Length: 447
Image (cartoon, rainbow, N blue to C red; front, side, top):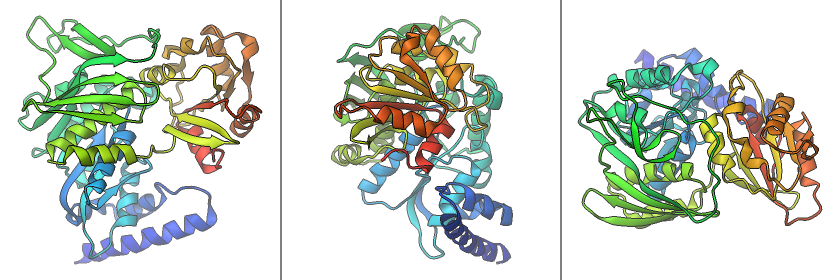
């Protein structure tokens, strides 16, 4: 009874904290109420599962967590369900607590919860809230100063999975590191691509490709390699990419992509998405696999894909001073290299790189990212943020002529400079790191 009272008090505290932060700050408050609640009642999250009537879904991985969880949530809501979802991507423990504390009511239950979780915090989340489904998108090198090598990140996710015996895994079969999570488990659903086609010219990436050995120690062989370590792999010991429950062919376009998804029952469904790039096609396929597995009809899924609005900075389109603007977060070599393939080289380009804690202090990833894709940009490229000079140096060595590079540390001024172009048909591309993206959003630099 005492704990229940503390739980109800936590809900009151959270809503009071939200009011306070809205009055005193421009912050979106994606974690503040959660931090306050967890300080008052550390066991708060252990009560939240009881307010979910059906299933709890978590999403983790290096790239695509926010988009995949957003797609899953939108599909469920389009199906007529009520959903608790950390929409804005605050994915540490405080972010999960924040959304539950603000959304829950003492006598109201939701049908589903969809929680994006940072890889390092999934284990802690499962201490309080076991999940029914875990979607793992991919594992790439990311912020070495925070997470260490990939084996460390994989071990953290595996530890979380081991705590949850009833968990159903939805895994990217094309990623050999992700596939390993399914070994020895009965409830595993795999998704992946059989063929990838581009209806636009895509330059061969110069970004270094991760090399992974099989669990037996031998290098993996690839019959198809889509990007980074993702593809069709095998080893002489017999280990290979598993058969997919949901396999797909995809055609990647400049404005949309078409997925033909085949189930194990040989049913084929077609889906289109306005999210661009192969990396987003993987996110869509993960969400579609979850939806089909849970009996959601294809028409509802397509409607949800059509109405899905990108989270700020995740392939999001805005208007700035009359210019069509595309904002795409970059934060690690593989993700950045895939984003760079999609950049409109005739647009005004702003690259804003910070090195705050949430970005990772180590910016060596800039040198492993394929900025060579920008060497033929027709307009000026403006570098900004705390590491504007480092970014400018990287562009110089990528082959971008020095006279085309402008250094403007102020993110506001950099965007204003890009938007000063008199030709309103000229598009703008903004590529920010994480805290640069937050600054753009907080100061409402895009409108």
